[in-house]
Length: 194
Image 1 (tube, rainbow, N blue to C red):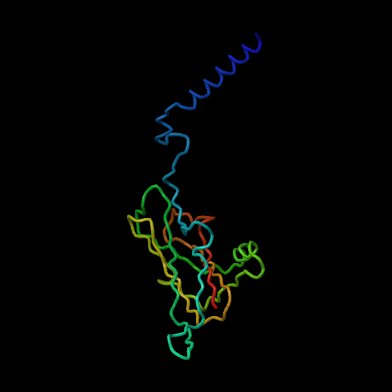
Image 2: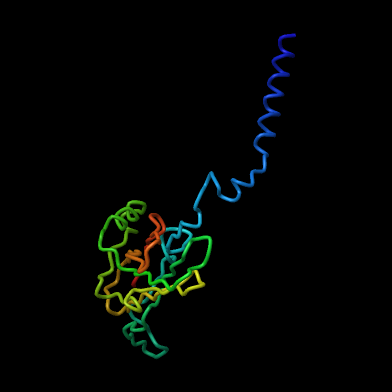
């Protein structure tokens, strides 16, 4: 008999919890209480599926035109990587935004990334003087849009053979009220020069 009563009480308790969790609350849905001001969160990030912006690119240090005997020429064709920026918010930008990106001078992100790799597979920082950022590093997000980008360029023939990493971070936003993402505000561009 006691077991039946316990079963009934537990069943009623579970039923009450199920119905209580299904209540439609218009005031909550309209942000009168609960999670308030979600439209206030305007976060700028560099979209990507992981911390590396691109999969590792392999670029020749020299190219061989179709000649006999083969003659090698420096690989002077610039490598161009598009670095996107994105506004994560309920609405597109209400104003033109200038998002400044820069080459991160701190080595903490490089060290953290290299710690995940075998010693022979680790990367070294690409010298900053070998890298060019288009538009002074300022990506424009136009009013009514969410996205912008800059181009990062380097020339393989200006480097020695090796595995290079370029840490790119969002440095600033030219308007107030926008937050730079803490975990999506940087990316690592990887390049192998052979």
